[in-house]
Length: 260
Image: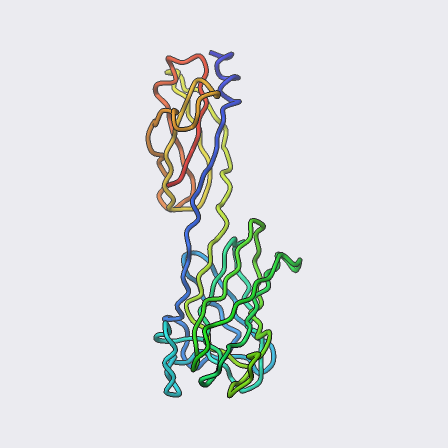
């Protein structure tokens, strides 16, 4: 039994968590409040601030405007002067997007908007986009990166190249972010008195996991055997435990944990 226990400790434990997008639609934001503010959605807390004269939380149609895709409360410019929108996050992200509408009136082109991402102050990357020309046209500004980030700056980068009737300000709504998958932290694997193998790990509370096994690492993952689901105990704790009762009949076994 001791030899088997030592072999099992070298088991392959792989986490394949699918990232879930979190939406900030500002529905519960404090109306009329100027930035900075904190908002929380899906377990992620975002701190919104700004440069210059900044932004406040207003109804999207507070001045008779109805940009496509906007509804309810949104981030609204506090002046006619350009200001960066700055957002800090409580968790590292891999994806960021935000719906925006620049102040433009039947222009032949639209402003360039830029988002720049940082991790703890270090530059990660940047992306730009332009809306289709129109009156208060809408577009989604996006940034994705395999390297995580926790700070973004949304910047009015350049005015419409064809000129026209515009202002260097924008509204924003429906910010979506994707937190980076949390790593699995493996607890002490044990062989119980009846020969069953048990392991535990910690991860995001409320997640769902399944366990797969094989006795041959050369097999493709599609040929591994499905053993069952993992129990979170107590619920909401982020502590997960699985017991393989069939391990008593195996000289060696490798395990993979996946999240759908």
